[in-house]
Image (cartoon, rainbow, N blue to C red; front, side):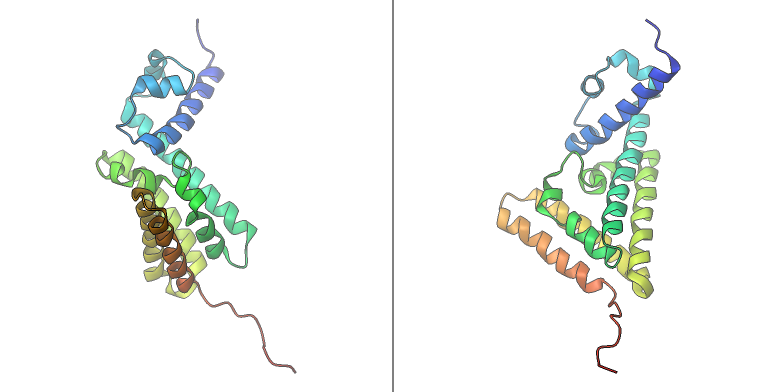
Length: 197
């Protein structure tokens, strides 16, 4: 049975969305096309009508995952415009985010996998990382050139290590210490005059 263009486009979006989550959970090489397509409710035969290769899907899924992650950053920042960095670091360096293997940060989940992929997958990650840095630079102000990469590295590294250990106290400690370091980088906000007139 032929699939309409509209249905084909919807199927493609479904596959990209499902792959963005499954790749974060299992890695690029940890899941085959058959299981990816099954997760999307489609047959493996439909894959090649939608994508040139698994790498093509990895590029699209990486973009989608990074867009979703950046959306979460923007949502958190919008909820606390007076302290966007504090709001983002509070959710990012939380035990809830640590547990979100399918929906959490794609750089944490797939960073080492992306390093072993082709240039197109790396380009997707680079674009997303640059967007993370742009937001951090905006929030950090004058010292952003040096601070933004340090803050991003601290946050990503803390979540990655916190997921890699069995000891829950040690895992929590990485998140807590990273949160303190990130808060230390936040610009001091002028709260106005402190004395009476």
